[in-house]
Image (tube, rainbow, N blue to C red; front, side):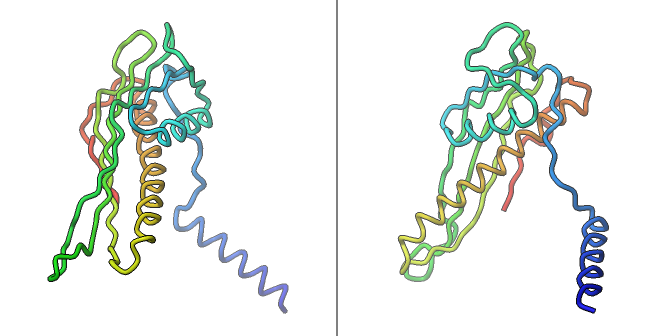
Length: 180
């Protein structure tokens, strides 16, 4: 009886996952012009490392130096900021927002703009506990790591949109996104 219950439970779980539209994330399908890319990121070493890994897992060769036939992915701005959201009656901060702003642009190997300069903005809010200031630093660092991971995916989605539009340019219509 126990074996039959386990089998039924596994079958129902598998059917539930397929019914809800769940599927494993695959590597991004990037434009052919991005087979070789030189990546420059100002202000975000973690972003540069994580973005390079994501590009490589999508089949892109990340080059150390620019050159002919090498696309250039520029990230001229990658910065975090913290903003006070609410203050209690005793003039103590009770909520913060961690904001992450990144600008990105892609040129092909001939210098043509494939992805015009776009600004991507994300934020996370958190409550501040004045009695646990040590935990706050760790909390902000974890939020920044999470925002960095989400930012890499947002950049890949924009690059993948180039492939879906036949490798042409993508207008910066939805250039700003906010995640909470």
